[in-house]
Amino acid sequence: MRGPQPASVLAKELGMTSEGARLQLVKLQDEGLVQSAAAAKGVGRPTVLYELTAAGNARFPNTHAELTVQLLQGIAGVLGPEALDALIANREQWTTRRYAEALQGAPDLEERLTRLAQIRSAEGYMAEWQTTDAGYLFVENHCPICAAAQTCQGFCRAELTTFSQVLGEQTQVERTSHILAGARRCAYLVTEKI
Image (cartoon, rainbow, N blue to C red; front, side, top):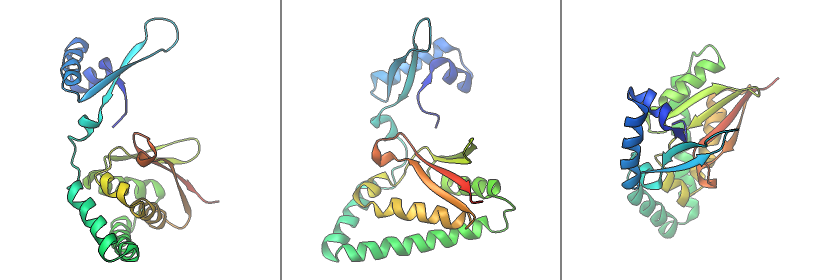
């Protein structure tokens, strides 16, 4: 959820020694689940950062990616791209209604972001938010529908529209990082309109 990290940080999170964490990371690296890279930070020895590989990420739920991709391709091939667009629009409306109900009564944007992160995390997105100088950063650290989104960009467009609608008309939502564009996560800058 936090991107590349040194063994010492992972050790602290797991309640073990740094050496114990490094040993586990070497085993994971040997299995092809983790990769490491040195990062220079000033004078001294570079810090070794560890992160998941594609095989490591594949250990997370993928929402039956292969079947989903086949169905999407089948819909577009048999019924045409308009039918696929109509299905995505229908899903977008359903999702927007469901999220709006869950966010109803939230007293402010921070509470709406908290509730949205909880919903999205329950769906497998590992969502969180934080404040920034520019506003709020809403982050999805995993995409359980990545294969479907690669097949049809309409899912990503619908997601952005849904977030804009449920966070309120006084907010602006802009995607700043996108997994499909090579980023390690999807991130959205959320600002309040003045």
